[in-house]
Amino acid sequence: MAKTYVSTTINGEAAEFLCETQQTLLDVLRDVVGLTGSKEGCASGDCGACSVILDGRLVCSCLVLGVETEGKTITTIEGIANGDKLHPVQQKFLEHAALQCGFCTPGLIVATKALLDENPNPTETEARYWLAGNLCRCTGYDKVIRAVMDAAAELRGETVG
Image (cartoon, rainbow, N blue to C red):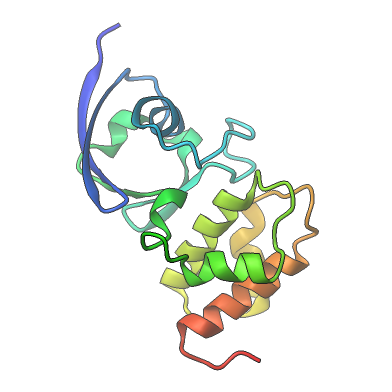
């Protein structure tokens, strides 16, 4: 089958790849580009494990075709940290033990970053609604929400204690 050339930006870097027209962005990221942080949990947009930020919008990469990303900007879990320095969201997930098996963690962190980019001061209810598309079978979500609220406060420059 013929492949399509795609030129995009992934995690702040220019990226080019060839993909088949039916390949999902998730498959392209994992199998073509080699970024395996996004996970396939359901392949139907129900679990959020494959969440990425596409042109500033949170999306399930299993529901986007790779060819649709031509000229767009993609942020994956690999692009959240600044080199070796964890993003505050990542740090707060660690501090609050907001992960167990880790399968959902990349999607939750990307979704949290997207939330805080859009709304730096969410209520707990807003955070819970925003993350409702990210399923976790281990944590029970309370530690996740504490991490989100703590990261939001830190990003706003508030002293957390």
